[in-house]
Amino acid sequence: MKELMKNVVYAGIGAAFLTKEKIEELKSDLVEKGKMSQEEGKQFVDDLLSKSEKAKDQLDLWINRRVEEQVKQLNLATRDEIAELQRKVEELQIALNKKPGE
Image (tube, rainbow, N blue to C red; front, side, top):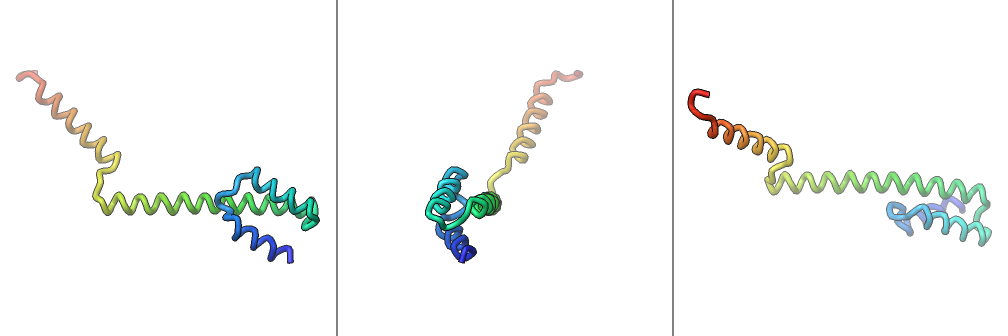
């Protein structure tokens, strides 16, 4: 029963967006209502925080991959490519500004 309750809470709340304070509030509420002991509450918080961090990391990774895919599809220049072009322009400016015989 406790596992079922945990799974319902994880799914219903959206673990990726819970703050530690909200998780602690939820734990306190469940302990007060007698739904779990203090030790179970601590384990619940630890599990939920761990799942929340993993979900955030996975979401960040997913977003980064989607952004990279979109940048490639748009054929936009990367920061490195722009830096290389700037370096080449500076070299050309130096070469143009040199006086003959220098």
